[in-house]
Length: 329
Image (cartoon, rainbow, N blue to C red; front, side, top):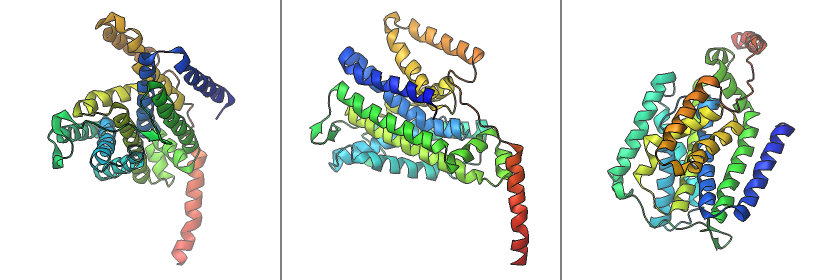
């Protein structure tokens, strides 16, 4: 991570720490919404930006995590913060089950399948599958999170909780980018054919990216349930997936600071122009169209790692060196 990027993160952290002293409850709630969407968009960025997989049903994983947290905290009285890892695991298992048969699909084919998946989950929630989801009314009375014996209920307290998760996610995902897994995803995104030719198990890495992104979305869903204390299927509609897709593309696909900026603009900017009533969404839409025409790579694009031909040659040489030994066995 460069010094310039570290300085940028330090400025954002300082601004967030000072926010409770400068802003009222309304704008603190807006910051909380930005943080939640940033967490969700970072999870989608792992699938879309890093692995290059088109997923327009990301709200389904968000919903699975939120309902998991809500159900175990209301029916089994498990503290909602303890339910966060359980929600992440449930969303990851769900993603592994639904993604495995379709992970080989590319581009718009995968896009259509994920749209269908998101709608199936939403309709299942509306129809109260297994009598657990509360149907169209959703689940009420989700308990507030308790941390070190203190019940979190004020917007400034949620600000520290939500952005604490965002900070941890940013740190972990930057570390992930430099790992073997992150480099494999980079090759996969830049050139899947060359990546497969150099020995990268593309199907395995695609599935891993999908599952990990879903786990993070499930975790964000559980935090959302704890903040709102009430959830319903309308909160996880197709529009939520569209907003997350827009955040990643606008900020810069694959770029972590770009996704954070995209969340701030897509979620925070319409609130600034709330006084213009319905016209604000028209202006917002036009701005988005102009941005996509003049700066398609996003506001803070990822600095691309090029797939070097030498990587492929090195992999072929390694396989050729192993071949005689395999023949001898």
